Amino acid sequence: MSCELSTYYWTDSFTTLCWITNNHTWKQYVQYRVKEIHNLSDREQWKFCPGAQNPADLPSRGCGGEELACNINWWKGPQFLYQPASSWPVLSTPLSTPEAKREMVKHPPTLTHTLATTEADPTLSNLEKIIDAARYSSKVKLLRVTATVIKVAKFWRKKGKTTQSWAPIIATDLNKAEEKWIQTIQHNCFSEELRVLKSGHQIKSNRLIAQLNLGLDNEGFIRCRGRINNADIPEGAKSPLLLPTRHRFTSLLVQSVHHQIFHNGIRETLNAIREKHWIIRGREIVKQVLRCVVCKKYQGYSLSTSNVAELPPDRVVDSPPFANTGVDFAGPLYIRNADKSSKAYVCLFTCATTRAIHLELTNSLGAPQFIQAFRRFVSRRGLPSKMLSDNAKTFKAAEGEVKKLVHADEVREYLTNKQVSWEYIVEKAPWWGGYWERMVRSVKTCLRKHMGRSSLTFEDLRTILVEIEAVLNNRPMTYVYDDENGVSYPLTPAQLVYGRQITMTVDGRQEEIISTYQSLTRRAQHHKRLLSNFLLQWSKEYLLSLREHYHKNIQRRSHVALKQGDVVLLRNEGTARCIWKLARITELLPGRDGVVRAAKVQVLGSDRRLIVLRRPIQYLVPLEVTEQ
Image (tube, rainbow, N blue to C red; front, side, top):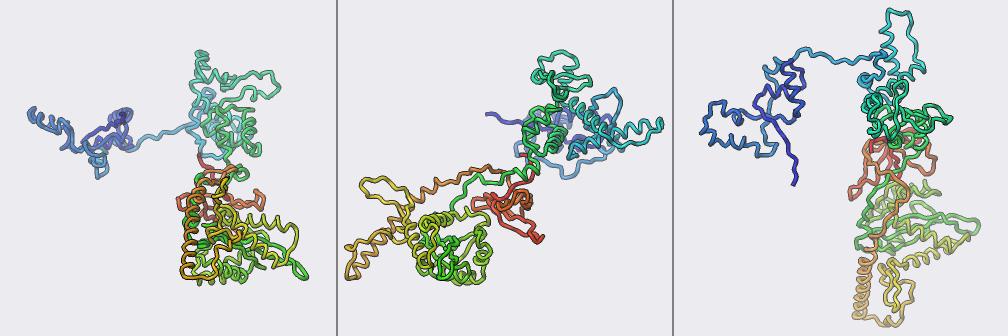
């Protein structure tokens, strides 16, 4: 059994702890010893031990041999060592004593890096200490700053010796600045290879030199030599300059080339880089740079969730038919009148549990017409406890009218009086209401195949809709087995609602001419047993089959974790991608399992005002360039 051991050093001297744990500059005697202690240990390893519990102080305080032999602290150490680290002694006051302050240097020397522009130091190994490449966002800015620093150093060195005035930066200055950076990077990152190439010994033993056939040119640059020296191409492409993978200058170089070739792909960017430079594992760094905002804006993938959402309780809990109902509109359908044709719409009610449907034909999308259809539905199917629908923005033909319908005060007041709750799914997410959207498709398929291009009257169309309702309510919900005896039948929505197949002819021998109390009770018990058997089949066959239904994610998606405040691109299938709007996430909307599948975003509206929208994450394209 392996375990990690930690080493700690204990002292009862406040002054010593102050010297070791602080970053001050001490006088020469103390500074040398503190530096040696820092080389051999870490500051966090030094702890404070009270003098009364320090076993090293016992002999120095005149403790005899017999007393030491019986002293537990001498043999086993302080008792707090047997306790957790949180119980160890902690200093309640800052580590500063008069003795420690006397050893402090009042005016410590300042370390300053200087830039020497002599020919004796061609590598400029201290250039990275003078100019921090991480502070610059582009290669051009870095080279202009470097060129300015070099020109200023030369100007002040020659001041008084020449009458030449200050000259602006030209292309030659930028080329020299780039050469200085490459020399510095090669000197710092490939010091071993540079030493071997200069000495000429053990060249074959160095793996990088042997693999890339490295060599030095006349100016001291490390280049990758190949077998294309006789090709009619530039010299830089024959023997490109060697650059490391993990360096800020390399990233800026790849970014600059990527912009020059108009944000093309990995292959084009890598080929353009290799015309002058050879980057170790170049494809890796190019892939990282290609996550720029411009590329993500035009080629980035929308988000997706890796976990399949759990079905809501409305779908998997045994409840009365149409207790939880989804409603949607289909249409328009064109009907024939006496003098002209007009539009009609199909209002579809779908039971979440039994998957039964109820169809109503309306002549418009107004609130009064919907209330009349809803009253007919309630009178025949019963009053639902919850209604679900989309936000009425998925209809192309009558988007404005349907939007007014579901949000009308008249409809809301009627449903409130009936104690019916109405919930809405997220906008632009029709798959959230998949169980009623699928039935809309089935109804449209039956209408399309039956009607074709013909135009019917209102009464004819209503009759056809009722027949389609009966056919779809008798569709099989479970697997149709090949039973030779014909004993088993698939489960249908009509069996869960009526207790029988509504398209089958009822056997007249089962009916009685005179109804008595005993016959009615017997028929009620028989009907109750039938419904119980159908519900048992529903829970054993249909409900268990829902585990196997998963949505296949065919399109590539991004799996970046969203955060509040992230900037995203708002997907709009009706417009070109170049004019999609930018949005900012204001709130994440997690589901029952804690997985975020929707969010509230703030976007600039057409009237130049900020509006807040709810959108599924499939409509959000992340633009934040973060480390993976």
